[in-house]
Image (cartoon, rainbow, N blue to C red):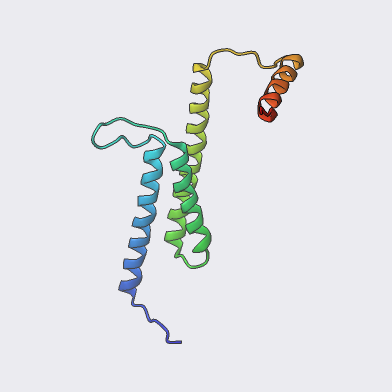
Length: 131
């Protein structure tokens, strides 16, 4: 199999492009975490599922490129990933606290009789036949 020889200039360009790619993924995650406002409206929105996907992509990139990155690439990727994970935890905790405050108070424990009655009614509804 022929070997591909790389020049120092090509390596520098590839490093720059890799870092740009990682930064784009990080920017999308930061946008989903509400850290970057929407360019048109200026509003910030939080989408934890989208943020999780972008963070998972960066973790996948780190795992699949392990041992093939330069020190600079590895340092930048690890730093960005660490920062995003910490931010995700903070945003998730604060959004959970906010949503808990908005929920009306409900009793935490239902009586066992109510649960049994509800279960019996549900089972009757699911398995009753009419001819």
